[in-house]
Amino acid sequence: MTLESFQLNGRVAIVTGCNTGLGQGMALALAQAGADIVGINVTAPDDTKSQIEAIGRRFLDLRANLSDVSSIEALVTQAKALTGKVDILVNNAGIIRREDAISFTEKDWDDVVDLNLKSVFFFSQAVARQFMAQGTGGKIINIASMLSYQGGVRVPSYTASKSGVMGITRALANEWAAHGINVNAIAPGYMATDNTTSLRADEARSAAILDRIPAGRWGTPADVAGPVVFLASQASNYVNGYTLAVDGGWLAR
Image (cartoon, rainbow, N blue to C red; front, side, top):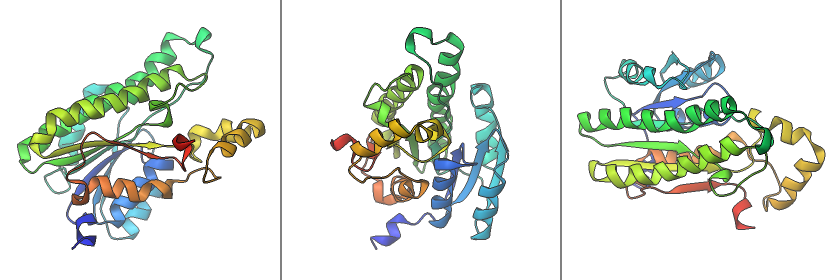
């Protein structure tokens, strides 16, 4: 009975930014748990699609730049093409820009905040409306960061956006829990993905980061597989507004 509560058979999950990295890992995990996947990306998620279809799940490939929130309502409508409904949303798409705060440009600020925060709110809103219309509740999982808790260095817009993600996760959970909609977040620690390529290439900075992580390693997409399945499943039905750190113990130091 307990294991059955983690199964996602018959569910449809929208995952944004799932062509590589953490998004790909989470999409694969949800598919392995039984869900069909709607992937929303700017570039072709060919590898993700082939891996998901290889395990017998369906993958609907939609393309959009979510910095433009005007496309979101149409994307939700298209997502229903798989089975006529949507059950899970994973707001993963995001970018980072690195520059000293004193030199940071308005464009770099807006580009990051529009995708990392504004699109998260409006995609959550659109999917929540769909959940309410279906009358069956649903799961929204936002991707936060260690910089939801900390200030970081040379990433002011990213820190602002991810702090905002944790805030709106709580705010939306408060409003929508009564409708059977669970809104939670995952805050990955330092992960070996495209976003950290420059950090990992800097030997001194990489060594300093690893020295602080009790687990002694960079995280991988596989490390968020279990948490995302938990938050997408019935096993998390009484979890609302929580941000789960998956960080190898970084925040415990």
